[in-house]
Amino acid sequence: MANGNFIDYVKLYCRSGKGGAGCMHLHRAKYLPKGGPDGGDGGRGGHIILRGNRNLWTLLHLKYQKHILATDGGKGGDSRSFGKQGEDKIVEVPCGTVVYDGDTGEWLCEVKEDGEQIVLLKGGRGGLGNWHFRTATNQAPRYAQPGEPAQERNVILQLKVLADVGLVGFPNAGKSTLLSVVSAAKPEIAAYPFTTLTPQLGIVSYRDDCSFCMADIPGIIEGAAEGKGLGLRFLRHIERNAVLLFMVPITSEDIKREYEILLGELEKYNPQLLTKSRLLAVTKCDVDKPTQQQLKKLEKELSVPVIAISSVSGEGITELKDLIWTELQKEQNQVIEISHLPMDIEHIERDEQSDNEDEEPTTIYLNEVEEEWDLSKYADIGWDTKKK
Image (cartoon, rainbow, N blue to C red):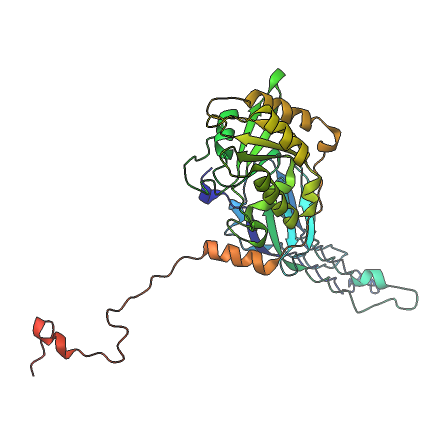
């Protein structure tokens, strides 16, 4: 998928339908002089419904649809005729979409499974006709209920990628190269930082026709939790991964320090991320191979399984798959549940606006530093045809 087509953030204005008004009507017929009240009820307004769709991988189809409006319910009629119900508005979203309040940043709901439907905004109930208000002492009520008003709300939809394994590391740690080796995914690979600008998914084949999903998350730098680098924009995708695979190249000056920096950024973003299973892969071992003593020392200091791999030579790739599969089979990693923290609306919208706004062309004047324009010095070059 092209980088420009991966949209994981949209802000929408949603409004459900208002309920139809009940009817105030008294039956009249020459053969029935006292027919009494027969006003029907108004119809219910349409709901705003979110429905999970496993065939969608992005929110691109909602990027330019800023308003989601359901239809209103119809008015009631005579002869106890009910008003027409408003048409529900069903919004298809990818599995893993999280919904926040667009004004407060409060978490509202999450669509996890294919076909799951969540009523985001309920339509207003229709008003009762005057037929409901007849009594022995009030046999001809001349009033009916109005319909309930519509509900409206600004909502933010965020897509958090569903994957079994998430790759976490600094830029140029070898994440994209590993994904291209163990799966059929073709992420962009280059020798400069932030080659990966959008999450990339790949299906990794395992023994006995088994497989698991791996996600390549764009590189994290120190201060990402405060918005540096790609910042909070892609840290949210790590929340839905069952196992986190940290990747630090053997060429780094201090492997332990880089791992602790990455772990610290995840903790600042959401402390619950530390409850996930973690693995550490020392990459680029075709350049300099670490000893077993060094690996065991890292395991003891960091309290995390450590393995040395090389995506170029294929060293340790099979052992890495075995290690990941073992972690995925543990009971605590079967269900991916995490509480979503409230969103910082100002920070998120500032980042999204800076990414989406087009740069306005600037006009540069040659002598804009001069207080007054002196055109007399240009008269002799022929541009001024005015005779003096």
